[in-house]
Image (cartoon, rainbow, N blue to C red; front, side, top):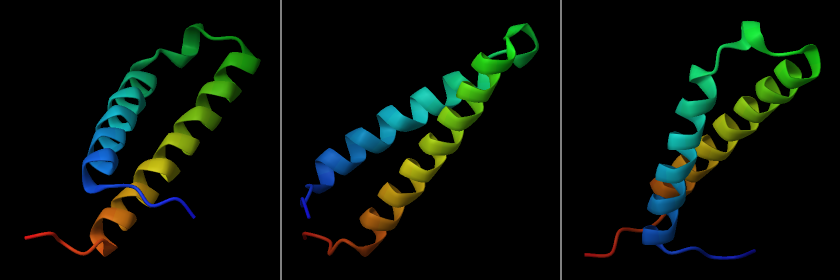
Length: 64
């Protein structure tokens, strides 16, 4: 398993949150069925990734 530094986790978390917020702002009414499904799955995957990073950051020992 790859070990990531705190800085890497923070940057990845920030980037994923930004992408998640942009995806959530998209007007789904204007999308076709397949695009809507893809967007819903993308949002779900981003939420999972953000949660996993948050867990990893919580469990990581703090460097003082």
